Length: 138
Image 1 (cartoon, one colour):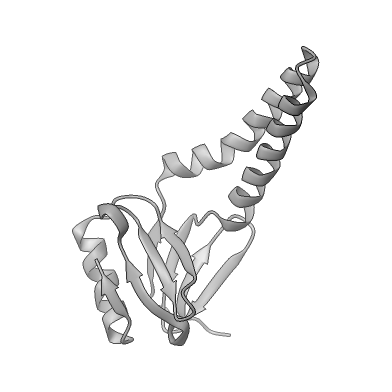
Image 2: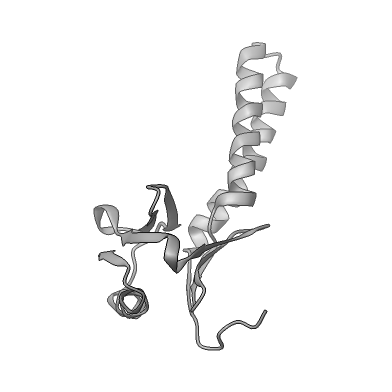
C-alpha cells in the first residue's frame, strides 16, 4: 500500500520519550532492591506490577509521534502503529492548552501528543483536519 508522500509528522518531546522508556526499568530495579533488603512482599509485588504495567504502556501505547495523511491519523508507538481512519474520527481536542486528544465516533479517547505544540504545528494540523470534516477543538 502506497502512502501519501506529503504527510504531516508531529513528534513527542524527547524528554517525555526518555522518561517513559526509563521508568519501567527503574521500577524493576527498585522492586529488586526491595526484594534484596527483604521488604514486605506486598511492596515488592506492587513495584513489580507497576513496572510491568508501565512497561506495557511505554512499549505498546505511548505515542512517539503521529502522522497525518489521506488515510487518517497514525499513532506511532515503539512496537506498534495504530491507525484511526478519518471516517471514525469525531474530533481532535486540546485539553488544558497542552497536548492533543483524538475522540472517535464511539467516544473512545486516544492521546495523540502530550506536549505543548507551536502555533505553526497547530495550523498545519488544523488545515489537514478541516479538509476531512472533523471537528477541531484547538
